[in-house]
Length: 244
Image 1 (tube, one colour):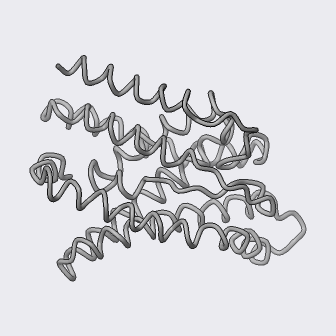
Image 2 (cartoon, rainbow, N blue to C red):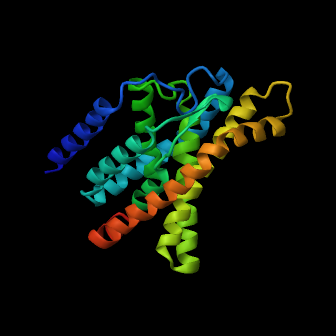
């Protein structure tokens, strides 16, 4: 049964690759060659401990719960597909897009979200020319780490303070998206500001994302509410099985 489920997950991912429209690739995420080598290495160093901890958690939780890996496969496929919707932002040298890491963090936790995000980003870099291999650490830091931990943190906080799951889920999707692009703006500004003041360059990049990312963040908030409500009403036991 587990082998069949894993095979289905792989088929879903590669089917989604084949079904994507045949259009010129845009520079989704931070594209290859944008970051100088020292900055690319720095973000690999920042991301590596989170990925290591995520892989360790996958091993430990997988030993206790045989249903975890199929669930991770489903969540990973969702993150891959959701984050494959680029909207070019030429002024920032990259693209806006929803991320899906807030939804993932609610269901499997932030560390495992780092793992599935790394797989999604690697597949996108290799097969879709979205992002890049040298910028993989930076993209993982913004989408997989900042997005997952910001979304998960606000979800837990709002649930404990208000008890309203829908509010917690909405803010999770919204803030995970905005946290991703705030860190992306910081990454680009730190590496590329040159002689320009860092603060001014950072605000310029951040504001370049606003027209697309504000509505996309709100959309991702509603997607998060819809996904959580679906599980809550159809399979509420999953929320207990996979709770961190």
